[in-house]
Length: 279
Ligand code: NAP
Picture: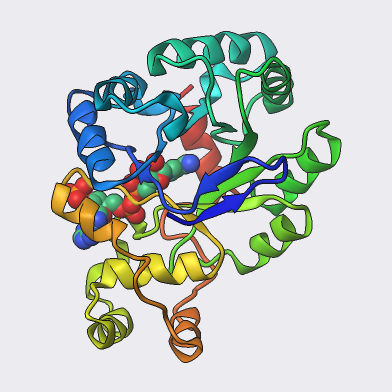
């Protein structure tokens, strides 16, 4: 495994396993499969409803807790100091652990300054090894970064070959915050797995479209957490450290960037209304 070193010195695997939309009753099995393959970093969230499955999987693997890097996220309904504080305890209980490796604010809505204060406090108390944000576009990212006492170690944002986050990435880099991709395959949107550029490059290396897409992100210094409930695909997604894309191939993939989301924009009022309807 390769690692990145976060702004507080904590080492984080460059490749992890995501469990968004993994049904809670399947999560334990999925996490155990992933661990057997070699994944040690697991990305979940309060909103996914499967933190318990992640905790069970880690426990049942029999591996020591220190082997794992577990990430979870505070949901909007737990925004604000008091609620966030209680939700951190709840996440620790569900994950069956004394500490979380990385805790993120899931969305930049509600009293997220209060949330961040609760996270800073838990970080100082040793309950969190690193703290950060998710879905913070440059405006909100820079605002929070400027006023926070403990600078966000990570910003997890939609990042894949069609949305490479070139501008956002510059601001993160400048401020020492690690970019982490969600949706490295854009959940298959835009006929992702049949993309001719990725296919052709893959054929040259004897690799799949998924492997080329992950390799591109890794070589672009992006941390990735692909999701699959299928063991074969988990394996495929893990086997991305035995080849390198050439500078020319990187350039070809860079040209696929549209600079836009394939999901929704956090600048669009309709997106905000949609998020508010979930609280
Ligand atoms: P993703 O990883 O881009 O794509 C997952 C989809 O691709 C699933 O439908 C999966 O199907 C399929 N797939 C996986 N590997 C494949 C392969 N090798 N070949 C063909 N199909 C493959 O989507 P994601 O789950 O949205 O993103 C990854 C992780 O990021 C999440 O699990 C979550 O941890 C995190 N995330 C965070 C946020 C946030 O707001 N912070 C938002 C979304 C996601 P099968 O499962 O059937 O294999």
